[in-house]
Image (cartoon, rainbow, N blue to C red; front, side, top):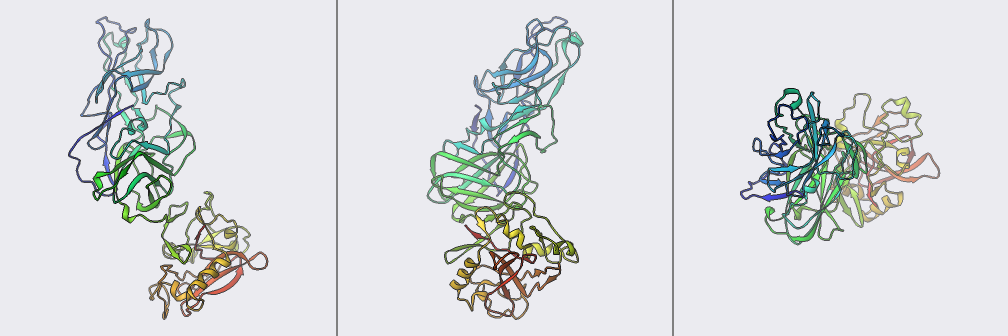
Length: 521
């Protein structure tokens, strides 16, 4: 596999800084084998050379080089041939092997121009070579494991095996066409994936690092790639037949690292699939590979781009219990009250936790006749602005709650008993004051006695009546329970008011639209 060469003098790097790879170019040239006018049956010799200071993989002063006898590439050409006579079959996944170790190398393999072929030849190539594949260049197998292994802190040797590359297709004039020795064949290799460098400081041991993203998958168990494509700069390659996609990946250290007070002392490298991410990413740290603490960080603007390295600085002291993250990528803070762990803001997902969409119903008449799950936001469909969503979250009818898929995985809509346990713990008559946001920025005056000492930050998001009309934003907040009252379609909910210090227990038809707070399982 490819070898990483470490260079000193690495500059200080900013948090989540996107550092572009050096241009990647590994050329393969047709070496002059003789001076015959027609070289159609001449062996095509392949070499890689340093073109425009290009190397196989550049990770900002971390250079990956070819390794002699180990590194192999697969080459395709619709006109080049397998036989020394210039005949035989066309070149399909021909294996070429690095001869020397370094950022440039000669390669050994067998490929001929083809007798009597006077049209131009087009070449395609990829790394690493797949010995078990004999198919076409438009369906080369590709995979990216979500479980990656690094030998020890600061070792990036594992990147080489994960660094899938595809050469930009190139067309070369054949010797049979010009009656001259063929021009050099330059194949510029492009990185398909993205590299993350986690720089971690703190105390104690580090065994593993996990990345959890909110939307686009960062790893997959199988798929295919078409070598004929040439994406624009920074644009991702297109895959087909993908299976086993996942929005999280883990790097496990074979030898656990002892953290220090300096970020640069402990580095962990991860290879991910590029793509945009809507919402925050979670970075998990583990001392044993089993238990985790998490830090939430924003994804880079524009997403993770292929062929780039991103450096993430982390202080283990900032890590805590995992926040909730919904399928839209919204990350929710958490608060612990007694023995319960609650989300610290109202739910605003547009998808169930199995990834299916929740219908957005804005028309009043349609809302009235619903018997299935739906969401809206305050005054949606009329004069309402999506700005309400950011502050108060979305409103859901009781049928969405009944699916048991409304909260993120690992969380649930609290039962009537769980709401009662909360208010009893805080004292029934004062629970509202302890849960409500203090002041009158969102609550109507006087909001007397509100302290928010729990960190729950209850806000008055109002509600939607059965006929679709919206009421009481700024004065009341209403939160569903998952417990039905007597029989469907009526369920229990909790109400907090600007003028009351308690939390009221009421019930409503499940065609109402209420806020939702999720409770950890």
